[in-house]
Image 1 (cartoon, helix red, strand yellow):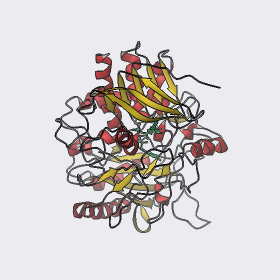
Image 2 (image 1 turned 180 degrees about the vertical axis):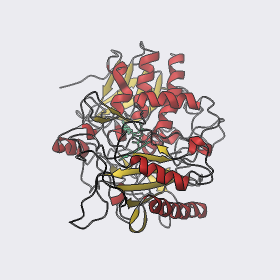
Image 3 (image 1 turned 30 degrees about the horizontal axis):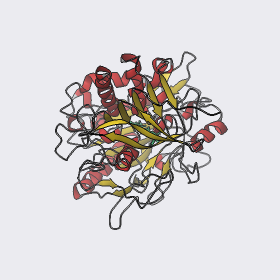
Image 4 (image 1 turned 90 degrees about the vertical axis):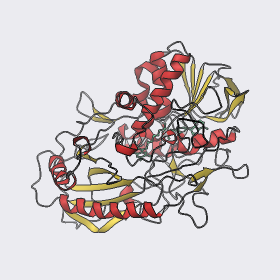
Length: 505
Ligand code: FAD
């Protein structure tokens, strides 16, 4: 079927991940008369659009949705199921994601060998874990004075709960044991606690992961002025006399090129491709692509052997997540600059003896994400010579861990060994440090700042310095060094930008 793109709208959103979806939702609620077009390069792989693929009960259909999310060459690269399975040195992506084909590490630098993206309606939130912790201490953006209210709004948009796994076997025990070893000296809000998760329980008892579908909500889906165009690659943001006037977009179904005019353009195309699109459009503030940061991740597993099996049949549900997967949060502090995500696993990440059945909930996977020592020279670069699979300037990563990063990493490795021993009997001799980029939390490349001093790309409302009407969205906007999962914060910042656009319209 031919489809027609509008010649003009009020607001264009590029990218349908949670950041782009948050703009669509807030604008639908606050500016219902605004005409909004959302362009997403990837296909629609779920119903409703943007839903989490794990909510698809049929494994064949789920695998197909994941494969179709894996970029222009759809599923050609090998994938691995869990971060614990990403052994050092292997370049493999997670299901639903695809890796940079090249340019992921410059000679003599660490690079981000497994930096990944997703191309589908919903972006990475169709494949994510849904952990939504709040930033703490220096992770917080001190010049965003309404941050807590915005984070609360982000909780609402993402459907965050803390009780989805209530009753998961051993989860209280895991938390008690972690608290006994980690809580000393911590403020109450920074103590071991349930992980806030973008997961809710349906009336029939099934657990459902939020994707962008939840962020869009009924408000966006029923907004007659909102249209989502999938398989639509935005190739340039058009700027005339210092303000944006629209985009050029390529219909990947027909190959036709279009120009769509708008008063406001929001680019939420992930932390690698938002700077790519700005660069391709000739919008190149000094800080574009700089202060790139990822959270180096250490993982380990431990097993609870000294407690009897708890009640519950332990059988994983047909769709969604297993009820045996309690998730625990150990918040970041400046004294311990890493963030802990502890998940009870359905299976052991390392082989166990055949006559050694896993008691549901008794295998505990620990992950610590480290905050990066921020540097201007860690960056993503582009040139006209190398093009990616979509024909846009291919990202080139320049990235190195500093001495401080190695110290924090060592501290995290020692801490995870301590935590694993406190919970149970550690599985394997030592923790793994995952290949850089495995966190899937890339930040800083379109960072927010208070003044246009060459150190930031956008103002505190996400509008790009020097280009009126152009907003950036997603993890790239976060200016601080965070260790916690960033999506909640990105959605909070998107809410702030969207409110300002709604006022301006
Ligand atoms: P994305 O979700 O990446 O969406 C960007 C969209 O833009 C994509 O769909 C892309 O196709 C589209 N796009 C790019 N370029 C163009 C273009 N030129 N034209 C049109 N469209 C374009 N985060 C957490 O906070 N907690 C977690 O527990 C967590 N777990 C994760 C687990 C996995 C396996 C994965 C894959 C990710 C995880 N993340 C987690 C990361 C999280 O999913 C991302 O932080 C979040 O999705 C980012 O939202 P976004 O809207 O900025 O970008």
